[in-house]
Length: 222
Image (cartoon, rainbow, N blue to C red; front, side):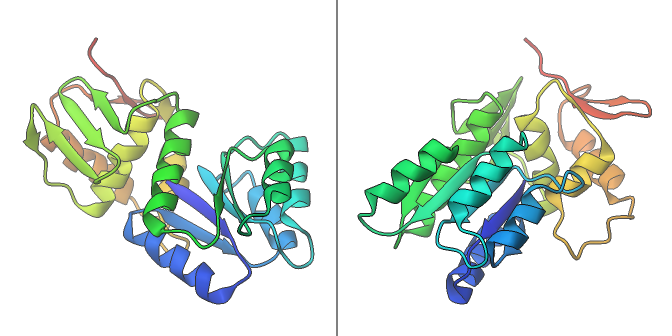
């Protein structure tokens, strides 16, 4: 999953990037409102969620959020607000935010709220995503098949995680690349096919279908 972090305080921005990266997220950083608006509006690199501080230089977070929503950008947005500033919370929600978190916060709570936003966007209400005998626990980054833990590499997990959040949808190779790899990854590589092949060996047969010329689809037994 790709997340845009918009935070102008360098220490907090680095902590967020490190914490999210450790959880398997591909992270983009923006340090001011103008850059945030540009990155969030870039259709070539869509984000699964945004963490948005409101007190930004060059363009404030509320204005950035309003511009995104006016342009039809519907990615879930978690805003960061100052302690006890209920005016910011109200303004953020009215501008189109999906949730808010008050500074200072625990990283565990931010991660939990982020997972919930991404799940709800995909129409999932539970922290555990199921596809036939396969269950993916988004809280612990753990996958089990018929009750047995499945050993996956980090990239294999990210590919499966994205497919599980988009069950039944055709997901192109380029979409997987944009959503699961960090900016410095070689995006021209053929490693997506490698990870898909490895997942097929570890998952029940027929779960991941190839739509020739289009991409991959996770097909879940009813």
